[in-house]
Image (cartoon, rainbow, N blue to C red; front, side, top):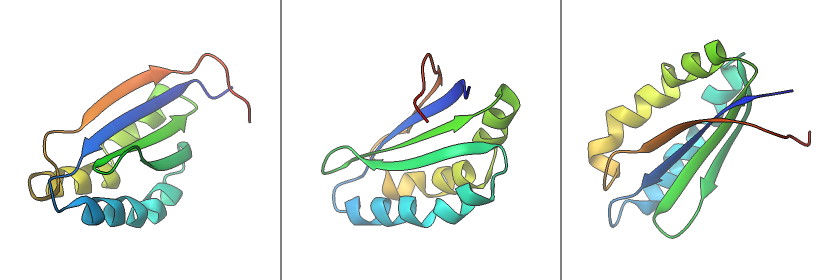
Length: 98
């Protein structure tokens, strides 16, 4: 069972909502290239609140993702796009329907 996950929450600066949405959509090919990432979801939670949820088989895969291209690109554009630093939480999955 996939046991490791990340929940990330980001808030777009006023007027940058479309740019954040497009950034997240454009990250899909990067996620698809990550062998250790089992699943990856970009979310729109509200008008200016977005998220990413992804899953991994082990801690090494999760750490590789946190140190990978998507995280680097997000942090590179954070000052321009985000109202505050992203909230990134490591979580453990208790039950999964696949």
